[in-house]
Amino acid sequence: MLTARLCSVLIMLLGCICVVNNSSAHVDSDSKIPSGIENKNTHITRFNTVFEKYLEEEFTPRLPGYALAVIIGGDVVFSKVSGVRRLGADSLIDFHTAFRIASVSKTFTPAVISTLTRPAVDFESLVSAYLPTLKLQKTAYLSELTVRHLLSHSTGLMPHAYTNLIQDGVAYRDVVKMLDRVPFVCKPGGCYSYQNVIYNLAGDIVEQVTGLSYSHVVSKNLFVRLGMEDSSLGLQAFLHNTNIAMPHKWNKRLRLWQPIKPKENYYQLAPAAGVNASLNDMTIWLKAQLGLAANVLSVKQLNEIQTPNIKTSRKKAHYMRKSWDGVTNPQYALGWRTFDFKHVNGFVHHGGWVEGARAEIVFNRGLNMGMVFLTNSEPAIASDIVPNFITHYLNTKL
Image (cartoon, rainbow, N blue to C red; front, side, top):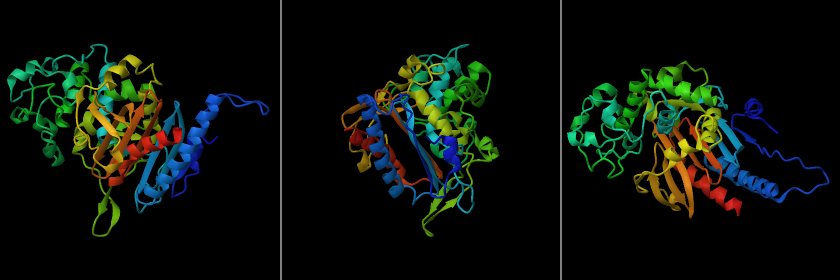
């Protein structure tokens, strides 16, 4: 059986595939394989065959590089790294190459808040109790706005409030001072409206109650405890790492991907978009979300974080491509999207997109399966990988 370490040594330019079947059952040569194990192994074999073909046809020839892992039955049964960290260089992507994960960073925020104990932060507490200087256009709503509203994008404020200013490089602290100019489209808890700046207030709360930087608390309470050794927050940590996947942007005139310098803008919003992580570490994070790291994130904590809070729509959830036709009941939990797909419920997902990088993570605790995908580019087809993964999983399970 190839380990991830051995697989990384064998990487070729066009990619490396590592298929793992971690069944612990021992079967003598003259004994019959138990039917449950036989069925699981048959499903994994079928899935790996069709999913590998899909990746080789749709992704490998088109992207500078990517990294992907699949968990079924609690085990990593398929993993693949492909391409280079930077076009024009010889450095190949491996399992410890750090990528920008953009808005997938949001999934760490409710998790780290749930680990705080002295003092604890209550999701139901008013934001104003932690951030007394915060000003909003409707002062009365300060007595209603809770931490849960921040983390479920249900503050009621106009969607993407001042994301344009962050995009333009305006300092986060200056943007926060202008929040009292942002109109409400509904009262807190009354509707879904996706945010980056407002979501980041959750990190300010962490800093307020702990007296430590958000990055320090996330590193101590999550990265270190889970063994996520390649993970970090912020631009400087990314650039100081010698094993990083540089972002690439498509040049329409030349019709090719070109490496670009990562920008500071969204890195300002560490709780919303500031995490860097490798495939190895995101596989650890995926297992934690499936309940396989109960010493760090208990089932009780996961249930609170992953339970839907507010209804959204296919359009607002970016589930409009044809590959997403099987999706129903899209909602937002705390730092996670949730949906049903082809009459199967319980899927939890988040995507991330900044200039030159995409990330996707999806799982289903009831099915004990999931996938993580990272790339140092921003192709439109990245929007298809989650529904196609689920479709291949469901079709090969029959």
